[in-house]
Length: 274
Image (tube, rainbow, N blue to C red):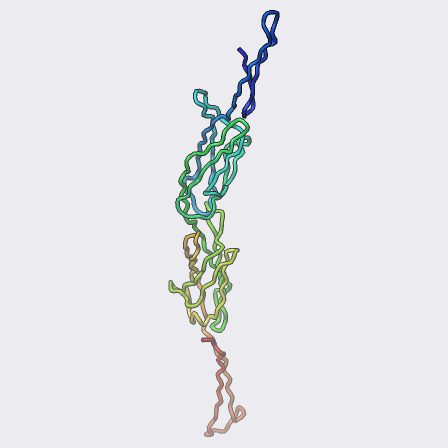
């Protein structure tokens, strides 16, 4: 018996030659033999089992041989692609380990995640049935800053609202709207879209609020990927305006007893926008 080892994958023409001797003539025989790749099976684990937008997900894969009648062995070469639909989320080089981390695309609901082993020189590729992964909206934090806590009635009030993602999400909102509430009631006409930096800036006439103390809160909404959220309350006091008075006496500042004194008073009130 002859044993041939380490034949590469593919079709081979094998021939044996008998060189003959003093009694027998030389002879030969050939056969075709195909070496197939070893079948494999792949297992996928992930942590966490469900996530929010922008949250990293850890993937662990295990690829083993699955030839019938042979002891299964771990495969340590080749590449595993973690896929969502037709998009590659991340790749794991088995020669470097069995784990990978990725943030899933911005999609909500139940997502079908697949692990696809691409195979190697001696091992066939494989993929299991998709795993269902639930992904939901992420939470945010809204911080409302006030430029001045006391503003004259004729002045401007200025606020800065900052919207940021919170752990476990690594992203921050880039779309959405911030509105201001005064004592729990929306201030009419005061709304701004956040920029790519997650910031919305407000500047409007203090007269819009009225001369008293106000409890102002920012309300974030309108993002497809992040939950609505309100900020804490900041206090701003709009001060009553003090008009300027001018008083003149037509007698030049003195008069005789029994004579009438004519006073000329002027009250200056600045223009207040409606």
